[in-house]
Length: 352
Image: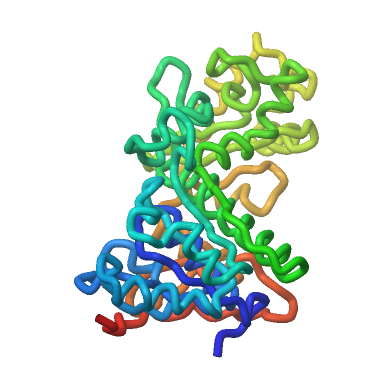
């Protein structure tokens, strides 16, 4: 029996790629009963972690029998997740009209990059496309260089899967109160746009301009990364004056760069050069050992494997190996369920 705050919630997930499977995994991590409906020839390779905690069955949704079996699963379901291009589920006879007719309380969660309508709705795209059109790729990169947003995190996962999960849970809450199901149209481009509320707020008060590298959040020397003597990097994020003072004091630069110089852009080139020279004197690990436990806001930039071995992540058991695969444990954490398990990936149950 699933345990967690979502125990008793039943979700049917139609197999797909991208953010939809992550959403199903997240709900399963938190205790929902998630049944993944896959094709008969599916293999658990790419996206394997996304399949954890789910019951997986194989159905041919192009056949009448397969479609009828899926509709039968919806009788006792709270929500459905699908990540097809707009119109594909309708063409299979499994669109919102058919599914809500079968179960009027169903929350029909739709995950796409561009949304169910609009000029781009029926065109192909991936994480980097959605992030760029939403405006979030603009500041992802150094001044004068190309934009390079972090793969999948901002778009597919942040603006996509997480917003779909919130939408489905909000819809289920509404359905349990009113008895009325509905369709959730979760588009990555919408979610990413919504995630930029802080950037829009900064722009609204003149603290963010469209020239890359000209604002503190993307151009200041005390909010960025530096290369160390071993070729690895550390990041610095001393936004508040007291943290800036802590950094400069510990690096022996307080007299050269007093507190009032922090936001003086004329000083930034000199400050950046001084910080680069200082951080280049030691390895990333040495700087982390010296500064991580202070308020200087300095951290090593870690790889996936290095992150799993970091003492803080080890103490919180943030990562775990399951079936030989390194992955993150469920998040967030709940006081009534302090040890949510990392579920194993199950085998496909053949249904025909």
